[in-house]
Amino acid sequence: MSQRIAGPAAEPLTLAEAKAYLRLDADDADALVAALVAAARRMVEAATGRALIHQSWRVVRDVWPPSGVFPLPVAPVAAISAARVRGAGGTVLEVVDGALSLAAGRAPALVHVNLARVPAPGPAPGGIEIDILAGYGPAAADVPEDLVQAVRLVLAHFHEHRDAPGDTMRLPATVTTLLAPYRMVRL
Image (tube, rainbow, N blue to C red; front, side):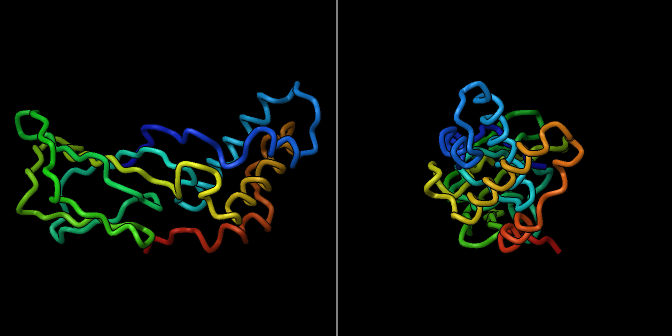
């Protein structure tokens, strides 16, 4: 299981960029446009399995994999920020530095576990928690331009169909094409 524990500090489009793209001059729709930008980013992230701007995620596992390697559910991954294990008595043990290593240059990123250096989790589910920093970088300029363009197109699609919510889930073919090279395929 994985969950976002802290969202990005910025969006891939500023409010001014989004309004310019939508050709809006008035300020009366600023809250709506900001919400649509965030929704468009989340849609692109969900479709690709990638975090666009740095955000914190927590990966929860029941046991260490026997192979000592497991994939992370989101990409790209910049770092492992923390790792802890709940022992049999419910005590929380920090995983020592160097016990986990990150192979981040691929999608999905892999965590390599030195099984001799990590404590065993207790019998309760979710005994292993690994916090990661995912995303292309802290700023919009770090995000690949075609993913930013996909956010723009999804934003425009959401704005155009804001009165017909059922139509917002069917993305234009252009967006699907832009996202195709970034989709993480799981076998």
